[in-house]
Amino acid sequence: MSVTAFTVPTVTHALSKDEALTEKISISNLDFYYGDHRALKNISVSLHQGKVTAFIGPSGCGKSTLLYLIGGFLPVEGGVIAVDGRPVAAPGPDRGVVFQHFALFPWKTVRGNILYGLERQGMPRAEREKRAQDFIDLVGLTGFEDSFPSHLSGGMKQRTAIARTLAFDPKILLMDEPFGALDALTREKMNLELLRIWQEAKKTIVFVTHGITEAVFLGTRVIVLTAGPARMADNFRVELAHPRSLEMKTSEVFGEYTRRIYRLLGME
Image (tube, rainbow, N blue to C red; front, side):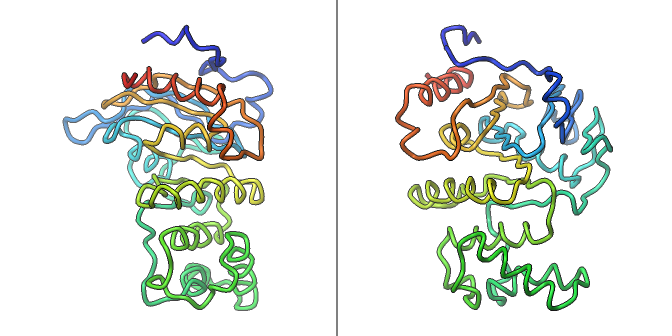
């Protein structure tokens, strides 16, 4: 499908010399099957350190499958996924995952949910208490440390889930439609919050979404996948300044990016 009518610059799959120095995740000739069903088809792309890469595509196209393969939760059977040059074979502490449905312990407070994994790691009490508080402050939950999930809004629950994952200090944050269950206003607020956290925490983020404006607003790079079996339809930089604001969504350049994706997905 042609995108020649757009003025947004196309970014090819190849890395420039400068970009190659910051490659964090390499995906090469990736295929994946569920039995006889082909979910992913010949995906090759490099994801860069310290950037937000947004994957967008139709529901059920294989976006989450790709994320789980990067996380090591599914076996890589065709092709290669490497992190820092090492093939992914299993989950690891360098990759943290934030799911759509919070997955908090309902009987534990905000602080308790964040501390749980640190306790299991055997981290000394004083260190884990400080780390938990640092990330509570980072995600804007200061004052809610002793609140239980049943007393939190959806956005606050997701902030807790993000803080819990960041407390492990993963180098890569894998986010599987983390704001999909939130109402539209809370989702907008969480988009802004995530960008603030990203700028402070300096993590590499891989963000899966089916929201076109969300992909453009969050991504420093957007990768568009086709309907299953998922193939790469496009891969481009989002040349919008940081920090980003909601007003940017009304700009002509933002509209050009979203129209580009709409056309690729056959949704004009």
